[in-house]
Image (cartoon, rainbow, N blue to C red; front, side, top):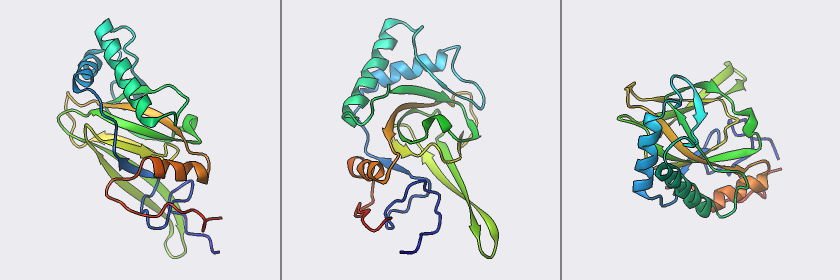
Length: 211
């Protein structure tokens, strides 16, 4: 069987699932709106929140007990939603924007992220890959994924990517409640697609044709 042209995916996906860089939106968990608001407001006022083109963990460890309890409940809700798909801790990430990068430390994993907050304007996740074109030489492919509060998406973080708000504003802060999913083999990827199905997309998750 001839090899498929490189489409940006580290591990093959079904031919009828168009998703360069293995990034797609899926149904997310039910999270308590009051807990989300408590954590968001605390993160926005936290002096240690990431400023500029950086991404950092937000622990809320120095916040009052009601904030820590709200974050704990959000993490527990996501943990119940993924039903043992991850053995690692669920984390809260914050960023005003992020320069193009690759998360080498996350190799072998996909990230399931719930967007808790963006600010007055939505964010966009930009992903990239380059491939050889017989006629044009090396060609760069970029895919834009709009992100809005309340959405849940899955992404392969070893793909070059960056994030930025659609417009800069002092209230912009991308907050993600995030869990790691094993994504090191074709079997792992098939399980992710079956367990967390893409929204508005129907296809047969059959990898028998892939070598």
